[in-house]
Image 1 (spheres, rainbow, N blue to C red):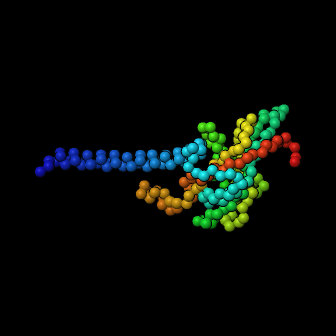
Image 2 (cartoon, one colour; image 1 turned 45 degrees about the horizontal axis):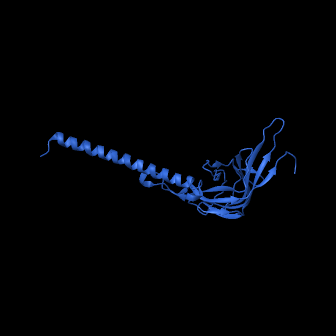
Image 3 (cartoon, rainbow, N blue to C red; image 1 turned 90 degrees about the vertical axis):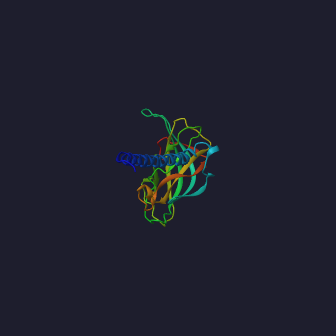
Length: 212
Protein backbone atom coordinates (compact mmCIF):
# COMPACT_ATOMS: atom_id res chain seq x y z
CA UNK A 1 0.00 0.00 0.00
CA UNK A 2 1.35 3.40 -1.01
CA UNK A 3 2.34 5.83 1.70
CA UNK A 4 0.91 9.37 1.93
CA UNK A 5 4.22 10.81 0.71
CA UNK A 6 4.15 8.58 -2.38
CA UNK A 7 0.56 9.62 -3.18
CA UNK A 8 1.45 13.31 -2.84
CA UNK A 9 4.53 12.85 -5.05
CA UNK A 10 2.41 11.10 -7.69
CA UNK A 11 -0.17 13.92 -7.65
CA UNK A 12 2.55 16.56 -8.03
CA UNK A 13 4.15 14.64 -10.92
CA UNK A 14 0.79 14.29 -12.65
CA UNK A 15 0.15 18.05 -12.39
CA UNK A 16 3.61 18.84 -13.77
CA UNK A 17 3.04 16.49 -16.71
CA UNK A 18 -0.34 18.10 -17.53
CA UNK A 19 1.11 21.60 -17.24
CA UNK A 20 4.00 20.76 -19.55
CA UNK A 21 1.63 19.06 -22.00
CA UNK A 22 -0.47 22.26 -22.19
CA UNK A 23 2.65 24.35 -22.83
CA UNK A 24 3.77 22.01 -25.60
CA UNK A 25 0.34 22.17 -27.27
CA UNK A 26 0.46 25.97 -27.26
CA UNK A 27 4.02 25.96 -28.66
CA UNK A 28 3.03 23.54 -31.43
CA UNK A 29 0.06 25.76 -32.38
CA UNK A 30 2.35 28.82 -32.53
CA UNK A 31 4.88 26.98 -34.72
CA UNK A 32 2.14 25.86 -37.13
CA UNK A 33 0.81 29.44 -37.34
CA UNK A 34 4.31 30.78 -38.03
CA UNK A 35 4.82 28.23 -40.82
CA UNK A 36 1.51 29.26 -42.44
CA UNK A 37 2.54 32.94 -42.33
CA UNK A 38 5.90 32.17 -43.95
CA UNK A 39 4.23 30.16 -46.69
CA UNK A 40 1.68 32.93 -47.32
CA UNK A 41 4.15 35.82 -47.59
CA UNK A 42 7.44 34.20 -48.56
CA UNK A 43 5.82 32.40 -51.47
CA UNK A 44 5.70 35.72 -53.33
CA UNK A 45 9.39 36.52 -53.11
CA UNK A 46 10.95 33.87 -55.33
CA UNK A 47 9.29 32.38 -58.39
CA UNK A 48 10.95 29.01 -57.76
CA UNK A 49 9.14 28.50 -54.48
CA UNK A 50 5.96 30.46 -55.29
CA UNK A 51 2.90 28.59 -54.08
CA UNK A 52 0.27 30.79 -55.79
CA UNK A 53 -0.41 31.34 -59.52
CA UNK A 54 1.35 34.11 -61.44
CA UNK A 55 -1.04 35.73 -63.91
CA UNK A 56 -0.59 38.25 -66.73
CA UNK A 57 -2.73 41.41 -66.83
CA UNK A 58 -5.35 42.13 -67.97
CA UNK A 59 -6.86 39.49 -65.71
CA UNK A 60 -9.74 39.00 -63.27
CA UNK A 61 -9.06 37.42 -59.87
CA UNK A 62 -11.43 36.21 -57.17
CA UNK A 63 -9.83 36.79 -53.78
CA UNK A 64 -11.95 36.36 -50.65
CA UNK A 65 -14.88 38.76 -50.63
CA UNK A 66 -13.65 40.77 -53.64
CA UNK A 67 -13.30 40.26 -57.36
CA UNK A 68 -10.46 42.29 -58.92
CA UNK A 69 -9.98 43.09 -62.58
CA UNK A 70 -6.38 44.30 -63.09
CA UNK A 71 -5.93 46.52 -66.14
CA UNK A 72 -2.72 48.59 -66.14
CA UNK A 73 0.13 50.12 -64.14
CA UNK A 74 1.99 53.42 -64.30
CA UNK A 75 5.34 54.61 -63.00
CA UNK A 76 4.57 58.23 -62.15
CA UNK A 77 7.59 60.50 -61.90
CA UNK A 78 7.43 63.90 -60.24
CA UNK A 79 10.54 65.93 -61.21
CA UNK A 80 12.61 67.78 -58.65
CA UNK A 81 11.27 71.25 -57.95
CA UNK A 82 12.79 74.35 -56.50
CA UNK A 83 11.69 73.35 -53.00
CA UNK A 84 10.91 69.66 -53.44
CA UNK A 85 12.76 66.44 -54.16
CA UNK A 86 12.12 64.17 -57.10
CA UNK A 87 9.53 61.49 -56.32
CA UNK A 88 8.30 58.34 -58.01
CA UNK A 89 5.37 56.08 -57.27
CA UNK A 90 3.95 52.94 -58.81
CA UNK A 91 0.21 53.16 -59.49
CA UNK A 92 -1.86 50.09 -60.30
CA UNK A 93 -5.34 50.34 -61.80
CA UNK A 94 -8.07 47.74 -61.32
CA UNK A 95 -11.80 47.24 -60.93
CA UNK A 96 -13.20 45.93 -57.67
CA UNK A 97 -16.49 44.17 -56.97
CA UNK A 98 -17.97 43.06 -53.65
CA UNK A 99 -18.86 39.36 -53.98
CA UNK A 100 -19.38 38.70 -50.27
CA UNK A 101 -22.24 36.20 -50.51
CA UNK A 102 -21.65 35.20 -46.87
CA UNK A 103 -22.56 38.51 -45.18
CA UNK A 104 -23.85 40.53 -48.18
CA UNK A 105 -22.78 43.78 -46.55
CA UNK A 106 -21.03 46.88 -47.91
CA UNK A 107 -17.33 47.13 -47.19
CA UNK A 108 -14.33 49.14 -48.35
CA UNK A 109 -10.90 47.88 -49.39
CA UNK A 110 -8.92 49.69 -46.72
CA UNK A 111 -7.31 46.46 -45.55
CA UNK A 112 -3.96 46.65 -47.38
CA UNK A 113 -4.75 43.57 -49.43
CA UNK A 114 -2.09 44.20 -52.10
CA UNK A 115 1.71 44.14 -52.07
CA UNK A 116 4.32 45.21 -54.60
CA UNK A 117 6.73 42.28 -55.02
CA UNK A 118 10.08 43.78 -56.09
CA UNK A 119 11.92 40.44 -56.16
CA UNK A 120 15.64 39.97 -55.71
CA UNK A 121 15.14 39.04 -52.06
CA UNK A 122 13.77 42.49 -51.21
CA UNK A 123 10.83 42.88 -48.84
CA UNK A 124 7.35 43.30 -50.26
CA UNK A 125 5.99 46.85 -50.20
CA UNK A 126 2.53 47.62 -48.80
CA UNK A 127 0.26 49.94 -50.72
CA UNK A 128 -0.43 53.46 -49.56
CA UNK A 129 -4.17 52.72 -49.61
CA UNK A 130 -6.80 51.88 -52.20
CA UNK A 131 -9.01 54.54 -53.77
CA UNK A 132 -12.18 54.13 -55.81
CA UNK A 133 -14.84 56.29 -57.43
CA UNK A 134 -12.75 59.29 -58.47
CA UNK A 135 -9.94 58.67 -55.96
CA UNK A 136 -12.03 58.64 -52.79
CA UNK A 137 -10.51 56.71 -49.88
CA UNK A 138 -12.46 53.95 -48.15
CA UNK A 139 -15.22 54.03 -50.76
CA UNK A 140 -17.83 51.39 -49.74
CA UNK A 141 -18.38 48.60 -52.25
CA UNK A 142 -21.98 47.45 -52.14
CA UNK A 143 -22.70 43.76 -52.54
CA UNK A 144 -24.41 42.99 -55.83
CA UNK A 145 -23.48 46.24 -57.62
CA UNK A 146 -21.21 46.39 -60.71
CA UNK A 147 -17.44 46.78 -60.29
CA UNK A 148 -15.94 50.17 -59.39
CA UNK A 149 -12.87 51.72 -61.01
CA UNK A 150 -10.09 51.77 -58.39
CA UNK A 151 -6.35 52.17 -58.00
CA UNK A 152 -3.60 51.75 -55.43
CA UNK A 153 -0.17 53.38 -55.01
CA UNK A 154 3.20 52.05 -53.90
CA UNK A 155 6.09 54.25 -52.84
CA UNK A 156 9.28 53.40 -54.73
CA UNK A 157 12.75 54.92 -55.15
CA UNK A 158 12.99 58.11 -57.29
CA UNK A 159 15.04 56.24 -59.92
CA UNK A 160 12.77 53.19 -59.96
CA UNK A 161 12.34 51.59 -63.38
CA UNK A 162 10.91 48.25 -64.50
CA UNK A 163 9.62 46.65 -67.67
CA UNK A 164 7.34 44.40 -65.63
CA UNK A 165 6.03 44.71 -62.08
CA UNK A 166 4.46 42.03 -59.89
CA UNK A 167 1.59 42.72 -57.50
CA UNK A 168 0.72 40.20 -54.81
CA UNK A 169 -2.97 39.91 -53.93
CA UNK A 170 -4.14 38.80 -50.48
CA UNK A 171 -7.44 37.09 -49.75
CA UNK A 172 -9.45 36.69 -46.56
CA UNK A 173 -11.31 33.53 -45.54
CA UNK A 174 -14.79 33.33 -44.04
CA UNK A 175 -14.19 30.93 -41.18
CA UNK A 176 -14.18 30.65 -37.42
CA UNK A 177 -11.30 30.24 -35.03
CA UNK A 178 -10.28 26.98 -33.37
CA UNK A 179 -12.89 26.43 -30.66
CA UNK A 180 -10.66 23.72 -29.12
CA UNK A 181 -8.27 26.50 -28.10
CA UNK A 182 -11.07 28.49 -26.50
CA UNK A 183 -11.37 30.91 -29.44
CA UNK A 184 -14.42 32.16 -31.35
CA UNK A 185 -15.82 29.51 -33.67
CA UNK A 186 -18.38 31.80 -35.37
CA UNK A 187 -17.14 32.42 -38.95
CA UNK A 188 -16.00 35.88 -40.04
CA UNK A 189 -13.66 37.35 -42.68
CA UNK A 190 -10.02 37.06 -41.56
CA UNK A 191 -6.91 34.85 -41.93
CA UNK A 192 -5.36 36.65 -44.89
CA UNK A 193 -3.04 34.72 -47.16
CA UNK A 194 -1.65 35.00 -50.68
CA UNK A 195 -4.14 34.44 -53.51
CA UNK A 196 -2.13 35.26 -56.66
CA UNK A 197 0.55 37.42 -58.23
CA UNK A 198 -0.34 39.69 -61.15
CA UNK A 199 2.28 40.80 -63.66
CA UNK A 200 1.78 44.17 -65.40
CA UNK A 201 3.84 46.15 -67.90
CA UNK A 202 3.91 49.74 -66.61
CA UNK A 203 4.05 52.90 -68.68
CA UNK A 204 6.00 55.96 -67.51
CA UNK A 205 4.06 59.14 -66.74
CA UNK A 206 5.64 62.51 -65.91
CA UNK A 207 3.72 64.52 -63.33
CA UNK A 208 4.87 68.09 -63.89
CA UNK A 209 2.00 69.60 -61.91
CA UNK A 210 0.27 70.94 -65.00
CA UNK A 211 -3.37 70.19 -65.71
CA UNK A 212 -3.90 67.55 -68.34
